[in-house]
Image (tube, rainbow, N blue to C red; front, side, top):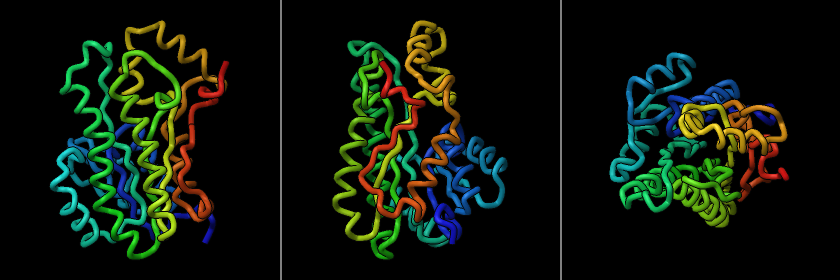
Length: 251
Protein backbone atom coordinates (compact mmCIF):
# COMPACT_ATOMS: atom_id res chain seq x y z
CA UNK A 1 0.00 0.00 0.00
CA UNK A 2 1.23 3.47 -0.82
CA UNK A 3 2.29 5.43 2.29
CA UNK A 4 -0.31 8.17 1.77
CA UNK A 5 -3.17 5.83 0.88
CA UNK A 6 -6.26 5.60 3.10
CA UNK A 7 -7.87 2.81 1.10
CA UNK A 8 -10.14 0.63 3.20
CA UNK A 9 -10.41 3.12 6.05
CA UNK A 10 -13.61 4.63 7.45
CA UNK A 11 -13.51 8.27 8.55
CA UNK A 12 -15.87 10.62 10.33
CA UNK A 13 -15.60 14.35 9.61
CA UNK A 14 -17.75 16.61 11.76
CA UNK A 15 -19.02 19.74 10.07
CA UNK A 16 -18.17 17.97 6.84
CA UNK A 17 -20.83 19.40 4.57
CA UNK A 18 -19.31 22.77 3.80
CA UNK A 19 -16.19 24.93 3.95
CA UNK A 20 -13.14 23.45 5.63
CA UNK A 21 -14.89 20.19 6.47
CA UNK A 22 -15.93 19.60 2.88
CA UNK A 23 -12.38 20.30 1.68
CA UNK A 24 -10.98 17.80 4.22
CA UNK A 25 -13.57 15.24 3.14
CA UNK A 26 -12.70 15.72 -0.53
CA UNK A 27 -9.04 14.94 0.18
CA UNK A 28 -9.81 11.91 2.36
CA UNK A 29 -11.99 10.49 -0.41
CA UNK A 30 -9.29 11.06 -3.02
CA UNK A 31 -6.87 9.19 -0.73
CA UNK A 32 -9.24 6.20 -0.70
CA UNK A 33 -11.26 6.56 2.52
CA UNK A 34 -14.99 6.21 2.94
CA UNK A 35 -16.21 9.24 4.88
CA UNK A 36 -19.21 9.88 7.11
CA UNK A 37 -19.91 13.61 7.17
CA UNK A 38 -21.95 15.04 10.01
CA UNK A 39 -23.67 18.28 10.82
CA UNK A 40 -27.01 19.73 11.89
CA UNK A 41 -28.38 20.67 8.45
CA UNK A 42 -29.48 17.72 6.29
CA UNK A 43 -29.67 19.80 3.10
CA UNK A 44 -26.05 20.94 3.48
CA UNK A 45 -24.89 17.39 4.13
CA UNK A 46 -26.81 16.02 1.15
CA UNK A 47 -25.35 18.71 -1.12
CA UNK A 48 -21.83 17.96 0.10
CA UNK A 49 -22.26 14.22 -0.39
CA UNK A 50 -23.68 14.77 -3.88
CA UNK A 51 -20.52 16.65 -4.86
CA UNK A 52 -18.21 13.85 -3.77
CA UNK A 53 -20.01 10.65 -4.72
CA UNK A 54 -20.82 7.30 -3.14
CA UNK A 55 -17.77 7.28 -0.85
CA UNK A 56 -19.44 9.95 1.31
CA UNK A 57 -22.29 9.13 3.68
CA UNK A 58 -24.21 12.05 5.22
CA UNK A 59 -25.55 11.57 8.76
CA UNK A 60 -27.26 14.29 10.76
CA UNK A 61 -25.90 14.66 14.29
CA UNK A 62 -25.18 17.63 16.54
CA UNK A 63 -21.94 17.14 18.46
CA UNK A 64 -23.19 19.41 21.24
CA UNK A 65 -25.95 16.88 21.96
CA UNK A 66 -23.44 14.64 23.67
CA UNK A 67 -25.96 12.07 24.89
CA UNK A 68 -26.68 10.84 21.35
CA UNK A 69 -23.06 10.42 20.27
CA UNK A 70 -22.49 6.84 21.52
CA UNK A 71 -25.58 5.69 19.59
CA UNK A 72 -24.38 7.59 16.52
CA UNK A 73 -21.00 5.83 16.62
CA UNK A 74 -22.68 2.45 17.04
CA UNK A 75 -24.79 3.19 13.97
CA UNK A 76 -21.68 4.07 11.94
CA UNK A 77 -19.97 0.88 13.10
CA UNK A 78 -22.99 -1.25 12.19
CA UNK A 79 -23.70 0.30 8.78
CA UNK A 80 -20.27 1.29 7.49
CA UNK A 81 -17.52 -0.10 9.71
CA UNK A 82 -15.41 0.81 12.71
CA UNK A 83 -13.93 4.28 12.14
CA UNK A 84 -10.17 4.41 12.00
CA UNK A 85 -10.17 8.19 11.44
CA UNK A 86 -12.01 10.96 13.25
CA UNK A 87 -11.63 14.60 12.25
CA UNK A 88 -13.10 16.94 14.87
CA UNK A 89 -13.79 19.91 12.61
CA UNK A 90 -17.26 21.17 13.60
CA UNK A 91 -17.13 24.75 14.81
CA UNK A 92 -19.01 27.93 15.51
CA UNK A 93 -17.71 31.47 15.68
CA UNK A 94 -18.87 34.48 17.68
CA UNK A 95 -17.15 37.74 16.74
CA UNK A 96 -17.72 40.29 19.51
CA UNK A 97 -15.73 42.50 21.84
CA UNK A 98 -14.90 40.52 24.98
CA UNK A 99 -17.07 42.65 27.25
CA UNK A 100 -20.08 42.15 24.99
CA UNK A 101 -19.77 38.36 24.85
CA UNK A 102 -22.48 36.74 26.96
CA UNK A 103 -22.18 33.52 28.93
CA UNK A 104 -24.36 31.90 26.27
CA UNK A 105 -22.05 33.10 23.47
CA UNK A 106 -18.97 31.83 25.25
CA UNK A 107 -20.53 28.50 26.20
CA UNK A 108 -21.82 27.85 22.68
CA UNK A 109 -18.30 28.09 21.25
CA UNK A 110 -16.67 25.92 23.90
CA UNK A 111 -19.48 23.36 23.78
CA UNK A 112 -18.91 22.76 20.08
CA UNK A 113 -15.11 22.94 19.84
CA UNK A 114 -14.23 21.29 23.14
CA UNK A 115 -17.10 19.49 24.88
CA UNK A 116 -18.62 18.07 21.71
CA UNK A 117 -15.26 17.12 20.20
CA UNK A 118 -14.20 15.35 23.39
CA UNK A 119 -17.53 13.52 23.74
CA UNK A 120 -17.35 12.21 20.17
CA UNK A 121 -13.72 11.23 20.62
CA UNK A 122 -14.67 9.36 23.79
CA UNK A 123 -17.31 7.45 21.80
CA UNK A 124 -15.06 6.65 18.82
CA UNK A 125 -11.77 5.86 20.57
CA UNK A 126 -12.72 2.48 22.11
CA UNK A 127 -13.15 0.94 18.66
CA UNK A 128 -9.77 2.25 17.57
CA UNK A 129 -8.05 1.14 20.75
CA UNK A 130 -9.54 -2.35 20.44
CA UNK A 131 -7.97 -2.62 16.98
CA UNK A 132 -4.79 -0.82 18.09
CA UNK A 133 -5.12 1.39 15.05
CA UNK A 134 -6.50 4.85 14.46
CA UNK A 135 -5.93 8.54 13.93
CA UNK A 136 -7.70 11.33 15.78
CA UNK A 137 -7.32 14.77 14.22
CA UNK A 138 -8.54 17.97 15.84
CA UNK A 139 -8.81 21.36 14.18
CA UNK A 140 -7.16 24.14 16.18
CA UNK A 141 -6.41 27.62 14.81
CA UNK A 142 -3.85 30.37 14.53
CA UNK A 143 -5.87 32.17 17.22
CA UNK A 144 -4.25 29.71 19.64
CA UNK A 145 -0.84 31.16 18.75
CA UNK A 146 -1.43 34.89 18.53
CA UNK A 147 -3.62 37.49 20.19
CA UNK A 148 -6.49 38.55 17.96
CA UNK A 149 -9.28 40.87 19.08
CA UNK A 150 -13.00 40.02 19.03
CA UNK A 151 -12.61 36.21 19.22
CA UNK A 152 -12.23 35.47 22.93
CA UNK A 153 -14.39 32.35 22.96
CA UNK A 154 -12.97 30.96 19.73
CA UNK A 155 -9.35 31.53 20.75
CA UNK A 156 -9.97 29.98 24.17
CA UNK A 157 -11.55 26.91 22.60
CA UNK A 158 -8.83 26.46 20.00
CA UNK A 159 -6.13 26.80 22.66
CA UNK A 160 -7.93 24.16 24.71
CA UNK A 161 -7.82 21.83 21.71
CA UNK A 162 -4.02 21.87 21.89
CA UNK A 163 -4.05 20.70 25.51
CA UNK A 164 -6.57 17.98 24.66
CA UNK A 165 -4.46 16.71 21.78
CA UNK A 166 -1.30 16.43 23.86
CA UNK A 167 -3.04 14.70 26.75
CA UNK A 168 -4.95 12.23 24.59
CA UNK A 169 -1.80 11.48 22.63
CA UNK A 170 0.03 10.61 25.84
CA UNK A 171 -2.76 8.17 26.73
CA UNK A 172 -3.56 6.66 23.32
CA UNK A 173 -0.34 6.61 21.29
CA UNK A 174 1.19 3.70 23.25
CA UNK A 175 -1.95 1.73 22.29
CA UNK A 176 -1.69 2.39 18.55
CA UNK A 177 -3.93 5.45 18.21
CA UNK A 178 -2.25 8.70 17.16
CA UNK A 179 -3.66 12.11 18.09
CA UNK A 180 -2.73 15.30 16.23
CA UNK A 181 -4.16 18.65 15.20
CA UNK A 182 -3.98 21.03 12.30
CA UNK A 183 -4.00 24.76 13.01
CA UNK A 184 -5.38 26.51 9.93
CA UNK A 185 -4.60 30.14 9.37
CA UNK A 186 -6.71 32.17 6.99
CA UNK A 187 -8.48 29.68 4.77
CA UNK A 188 -11.02 30.87 2.21
CA UNK A 189 -14.23 29.57 3.77
CA UNK A 190 -17.62 31.10 4.60
CA UNK A 191 -16.47 31.46 8.22
CA UNK A 192 -13.47 33.57 7.20
CA UNK A 193 -15.48 35.70 4.82
CA UNK A 194 -18.03 36.38 7.56
CA UNK A 195 -15.26 37.32 10.00
CA UNK A 196 -13.69 39.91 7.67
CA UNK A 197 -16.81 41.23 5.99
CA UNK A 198 -17.18 44.97 6.53
CA UNK A 199 -13.83 44.99 8.38
CA UNK A 200 -11.28 46.18 5.84
CA UNK A 201 -8.64 46.92 8.47
CA UNK A 202 -8.82 43.39 9.85
CA UNK A 203 -8.46 41.96 6.35
CA UNK A 204 -5.48 44.25 5.67
CA UNK A 205 -3.72 43.06 8.84
CA UNK A 206 -4.37 39.42 7.99
CA UNK A 207 -3.05 39.71 4.44
CA UNK A 208 0.00 41.55 5.73
CA UNK A 209 1.00 38.56 7.88
CA UNK A 210 0.75 35.87 5.22
CA UNK A 211 4.10 35.01 3.63
CA UNK A 212 2.55 32.98 0.80
CA UNK A 213 0.30 35.47 -0.96
CA UNK A 214 -3.45 35.04 -0.62
CA UNK A 215 -5.76 32.95 1.52
CA UNK A 216 -5.39 29.20 1.69
CA UNK A 217 -7.85 26.71 0.21
CA UNK A 218 -9.73 24.10 2.27
CA UNK A 219 -7.80 21.40 0.43
CA UNK A 220 -4.53 22.81 1.75
CA UNK A 221 -5.75 21.71 5.17
CA UNK A 222 -7.30 18.54 3.77
CA UNK A 223 -4.04 17.18 2.40
CA UNK A 224 -2.33 17.85 5.72
CA UNK A 225 -5.07 15.80 7.39
CA UNK A 226 -4.53 12.99 4.89
CA UNK A 227 -0.84 12.95 5.78
CA UNK A 228 -1.53 12.85 9.51
CA UNK A 229 -3.97 9.95 9.05
CA UNK A 230 -1.73 7.94 6.73
CA UNK A 231 1.06 5.45 7.27
CA UNK A 232 3.46 8.18 6.14
CA UNK A 233 2.88 9.80 9.56
CA UNK A 234 3.10 6.59 11.57
CA UNK A 235 5.70 8.17 13.90
CA UNK A 236 3.87 11.50 14.29
CA UNK A 237 1.66 12.12 17.32
CA UNK A 238 0.94 14.97 19.72
CA UNK A 239 1.70 17.47 16.93
CA UNK A 240 -0.05 20.77 16.17
CA UNK A 241 0.62 21.46 12.48
CA UNK A 242 0.11 25.07 11.31
CA UNK A 243 -1.39 25.46 7.83
CA UNK A 244 -1.16 29.21 7.51
CA UNK A 245 1.08 30.30 4.65
CA UNK A 246 3.73 31.31 7.19
CA UNK A 247 1.45 33.62 9.14
CA UNK A 248 2.60 32.49 12.58
CA UNK A 249 6.24 33.07 11.59
CA UNK A 250 5.82 36.57 10.21
CA UNK A 251 7.34 39.83 11.39
